[in-house]
Amino acid sequence: MADLSTFPITNKWPAKNPDIIQLYSLPTPNGVKISIALEELGLPYETHRVDFGANEQKSPEFESLNPNGRIPALIDPNGPDGKPIGLFESGAILYYLAEKTGKLIPGDAAGRYETLCWVMFQMGGVGPMFGQFGHFYKYAAEKVANNSYPMERYRDEAKRLLGVMEGRLKNRQWIMGDTYTIADIALFPWVRGVDVFYGGRDVIGFDDFPAVMDWLERCLARPASSRGIDVPAKE
Image 1 (cartoon, one colour):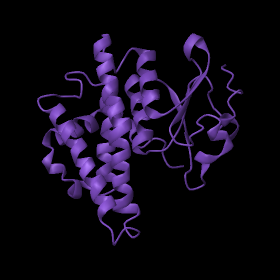
Image 2 (spheres, rainbow, N blue to C red; image 1 turned 120 degrees about the vertical axis):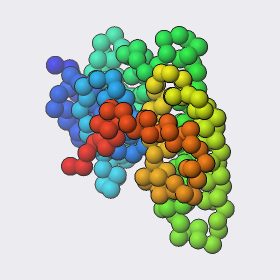
Image 3 (cartoon, rainbow, N blue to C red; image 1 turned 90 degrees about the vertical axis):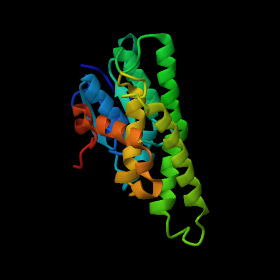
Image 4 (cartoon, rainbow, N blue to C red; image 1 turned 120 degrees about the horizontal axis):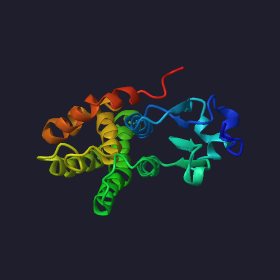
């Protein structure tokens, strides 16, 4: 049995089965990237729900694994050289899982780096900009009721980014062509989130991006997506 005692986070969220991957998360766009990838890869994992309402992501135990205090975070008891490894940042975790299994990423070096470019496109662009749009459109709407600039700025940037994706996905099944990869997993929960979490479908103008919408439906139709999209479940 793996010894995870060197990870203080396990004191707050004990592992029932320390021999499998431990996932600390919530069903947010960033969080479900990892549960969906794990489902696609068929890797056994145990989930631990991090309660934002109780500010658990800022607890010393959680920050011992991710000093930035953000979900998701993960412990793999079977890391490099067979030793446990703790990871944070969803893009890094996706890449790690793809490298670990040799799946969800092209086998050739050029394809791998191109896939990684699109993962970074999500991490540096789509995630932050969509998140800021949602913040000002839904959660801080009253605070900026007399100033439309913040919402309009991030709305327009979100639309621009969707336009980039639209161009990429024309005549393509997936971001990398015929093969579903971590690039798709990184991106589609955020596109879904604009509608599901922020109610911004019409404001962003989803109908203006038909290739993206068709791709989103294909992503959501995958069995692993339906299994991973609401992980961890409410207790």
